Image (cartoon, one colour):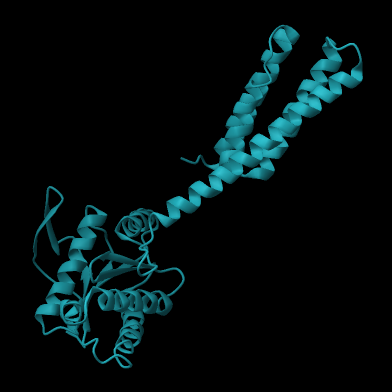
Amino acid sequence: MALPRRWALMGGLWMLVAAAVFDYVTSYEWSVGSLYLFAILTVSWNCGMGWGLVFAAVSSACQIALGIIQGTPYLKPLYFYQAQGNVLLEYAVAVILTSQLRRLFERERHTARIDHLTGVKNRQGFHEVLGSEVARHLRNGACLCLAYIDCDDFKGVNDRFGHSEGDRLLEAVGHVMAASVRRSDTVGRIGGDEFAVIFPETNQHEALAIESKLREALDTITRPRPWWSVTFSMGVATFRTMPVSADAAMAFVDQLMYRAKRSGKAHTVSATFDEASLHVEGGEVIALRSLPGGGPRK
């Protein structure tokens, strides 16, 4: 888990000062060089290699200054500086290894949230982004839109041509969706043949314009491959106020999508959420009572 940079720097500075004070009090009676590592590693992990090397250099400088002030047990000054050079080298190696470990950790954490077939966010990654966007919406009050897309008759492609062909279709859908939305939007594969998109700071009119572009792009998938006889049902929800949770928001737009499917598939149903639109009990959606601000459309 990463700390905010400011907190990490302040914490590292306090640890460095504490190590220097303890080093001054104990002189050479105790070996406290390892105490500086707490500050160096904390800063390296949270602030990167550059700050880690700065703290390594300052830690080494503190030990050299204390050695000059208090004296050293070495017979010749050269031996003292050589020893401190070795300490600085050890600190630098620790900083480099920690920075590399953090980079690998972040890459693995990112990969764990990507659907390997389609290249978009998987369910976990999508819900993490949605949670962050919901929190941002609650802070600044900007509109938030969600779209839920289902691939109609996908099961028929799997049944007739096999799962490999179905995987190729899903891969194409994921790539087209990622290429058709804005860079600020987030596409996720929620499961099976269902996808969702987060449109941050987007009103209903803007979301429907993006959805229209997205539908046109998706419709081009089947033109060179007529055996992919699928269409797409979409639900698009605009949230001026947020429901009790991100799960409730997903449930709202999910029900819009299913209304589109019941309307004959290849439809979009849009709605604006208000607090009366969704009845939630214990986090579970009980009923969708109204769909203000929208309806089915091609």
